[in-house]
Length: 158
Image (cartoon, rainbow, N blue to C red):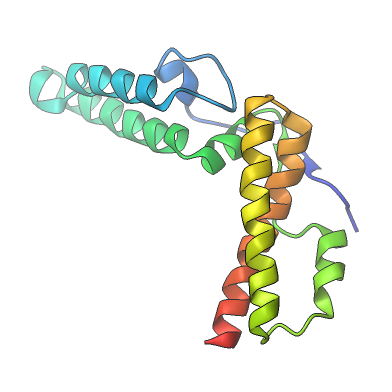
């Protein structure tokens, strides 16, 4: 059983979302600046304003994909880690074993998992600001597992 993020040799990506917006690769980005850059490019690449409608449509599609990825902290973190060869899975074995014996149908258990998720959100924000790749890989792995567990527990207590 593997205990950390999975590392792969190469991750293929069709486009670099940071390059599309002329941004430096970073876990933390200025959302207002991203929005400004998005509007500039959306106007320039709009299919109704370009002579080559096919190319403009393709560029608009890529632009929308890149914008959606960069404005979402979790997607951005996962993309950066994947582009560096780190694939974050959603089941850290140590955490899975810790939670396996819990009473999953219990509301108190749900609240404990929810509190853990909220603490992870705060820890991810701190690691993003510090540009701490190693911590982010581990935190995202744990966060994905906790989110999956939360969905299961919600179904059991509903």
